[in-house]
Length: 313
Image (cartoon, rainbow, N blue to C red):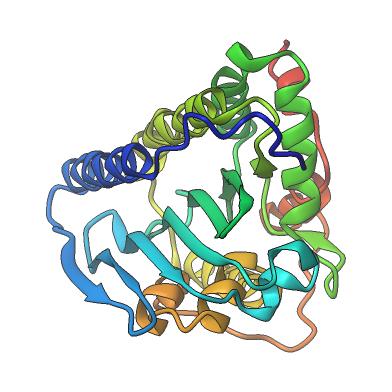
């Protein structure tokens, strides 16, 4: 990661403005798709500096629970989660701002989705600033459809295409590797995009890329809701959905960088943990029966897969 000669156009204000407008757009689109739910807004202040605007909805027709959270926090010292791998950040003032969302639909045929885009800046007197962008989006289906995974990844590819042919394969692979539960030996879902420490293109182009990822989230997710929200399901599908939600909890509490950074930096716990599902079912040593739809999830969709090739590209 290098910041040489790439700092002239640094502008935190334009990043913040984009993130707030994106939060508005996403919440409005999801409210329209559900038709019976509204996001509750909760503005908050952080004792150590900064604050945020959390929006949460629950008990909708389509959305059982969803959270779309903007935060902009700053402080004089970074938490251990940030400096352990980057000792050059020690002793620097920091700013971190981003938009993070998780949507848990009610219908087991509609996948859970997650997206996050963020900007980080660390400064020190008489030293060049250190900054980067990060984020991405990923999909966690329960009863998956190949055409949905193909659409999700085609949209991810479209977000990356203007920035080079190498970008989608790189960040798709990173997503597959990041959203992986090592203790389970399985992926969280069908992946998507994940990027971090991005600054090698300069501020303006990196910011353009972050916006492209943010702008493509609704294009990727809304068609999946529309295709699956009215499918009929039984208690069997609902029970399996609640069981698989447990994997989401495990990942967020054990591995997720944003969760660890937020808690260690004195962030607002309610907003940090808004990503957790409202209901979860736990089973001891459960295994799907061979030949069932539940087994198909494990056999095909939780394995690394070239979804663009699946779609004929």
